[in-house]
Length: 88
Image (cartoon, rainbow, N blue to C red):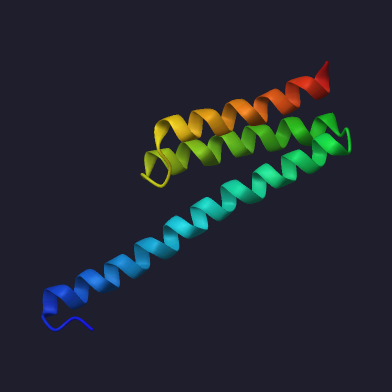
C-alpha cells in the first residue's frame, strides 16, 4: 500500500481510470459482437445502425486514449467490411 498522501491519491486515480478504460473497451467489444450477430442473421438495418454506433464509440475511445489510432482504424475497417459484404 502507498504510504505518502500523493501516492495514495495516485492509486485512487489509477483505479478509477482503469475502470473507465475497461468499461470503454467492453463497450467496443460488445458493439462489435452485436454487429457480427446482426450480419450473421442477415439483418442489414440492425447492422448499419450498429456500425454507426460502434464507429462513434471507437472514436471516443481513441479521443480518451483507451485505444490507439491505428487499432481503432483497423477495427472500424473490419466492421465496415462485414457490413458491406452483407449489403452486396
